[in-house]
Amino acid sequence: MILKDKVIIITGAGPGMGQAMCRGAAAEGAKVVVSARSVDAINALAADITAAGGEAIAVPCDVASTEQCHALAQAAVDRWGRIDGMIHSAYYHPDWGSIIDHPIDQVLRALDVIAVGGLRMAQAVVPQMKRQGSGSIVNVSTLATRRPMPGEGGYAMAKSAVNQLTRQLAVELAGTGIRANTALMGWMDGVPLDQFFAAQGEAGEAFRKQRAQEIPVGRIPPDKDCAKAIYFLLSDYASEVNGVMLDVNGGDWVAA
Image 1: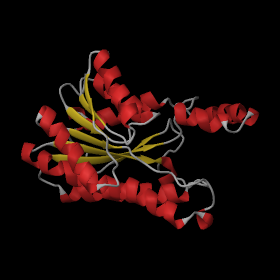
Image 2 (image 1 turned 180 degrees about the vertical axis):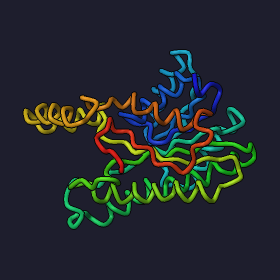
Image 3 (image 1 turned 180 degrees about the horizontal axis):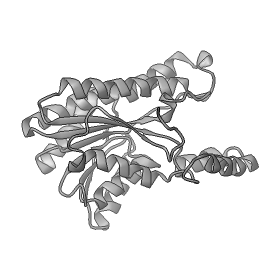
Image 4 (image 1 turned 90 degrees about the vertical axis):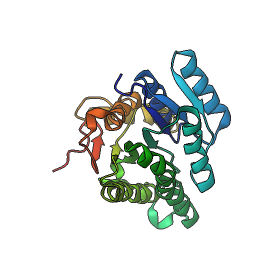
């Protein structure tokens, strides 16, 4: 249980890896603050974690609101007295299509939720982490910032900005005991991807098999297993890991 007794805030706890991270972090011993905009969904998830023997509270938050981000951090402190880790996983994805055709308001929304939202959350948790003299921030990013993919321009722009946010935090928080890292996720098997393939009808299953064969591990990595890389970055095992962009994609991208 590499996160035993650590208080971890997770934003974007919706279907897919967000929920998988909440359940997995609790299973690793963390006290989890489950957060997303959907009150019913996060309440149900926190109840499931508690029923399974874990510790969790649900705190609704729209990371586009500075006030709500600070209230989320305060809720963790009010309940458990500290914040050991914060995973920024909340995101917004503009409509699929050429970046030239992206509605600018959608691109701005992606930047506000993903990049500026990550900054809002860092500003909310860092003061408590400084008081403790320790803390770990993990921003969730995407392989699309390494290898541009048609249709994901606005989303990748915002995730690229969050990559830079991580680097800035790692350097500017030197000497505070706070680490900041990024996990870049590739294709992940889970509810969102199931919906993506289902929308393509009969061609979807063929595409799924093709993608699985193209990834060196021989499968599309399950989101619950990809989340384990984030637990590592939060844990004391990563005490010397700071300012890193960790690729989590089954070898789909191999950096030089």
